[in-house]
Image (cartoon, rainbow, N blue to C red; front, top):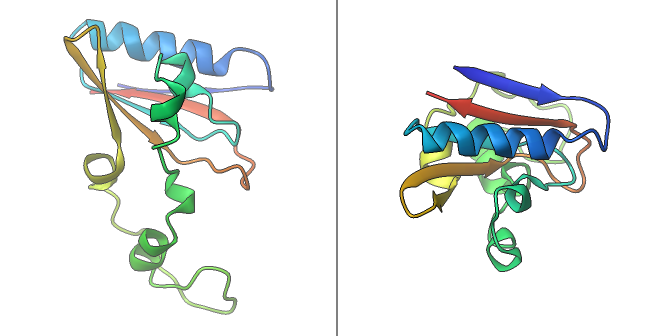
Length: 126
C-alpha cells in the first residue's frame, strides 16, 4: 500500500502522515515515512527528539550520493544524467530508524531540503 498526502501549507499534512504511519506500525506493518517538505516536520510529528532530528540528513543534500547515482555533477550544466538512477537501497542505507513504543519500527527518510520547495508528505507501508 502506498499513501501520499499533499495540500496547502498549514493544513495538517505532517500530522496526518505521522498518525497514519504510527497506526500502521502499531499494526505490525513495515512503514517507510518520507518527508519531502522543505519544512521537514514529519520527524517531530512522529515524536523524534530535536537532537535526533538534526542527525537526519535530507537525501537532497547528499551531493555525493546524487552525483554517484545520476552520473552528473551537481550545479554543472549541459550534462547528460540518468533519469532513472538506482534507488532501491536508499531506505536501507539512509533512513533513520525509529522504534515506536519499543515494539515497532518506522524508517524516516527526509528527501526535502530547506533549499527545495516540495510540499508533500508520504507514508508508505508494505
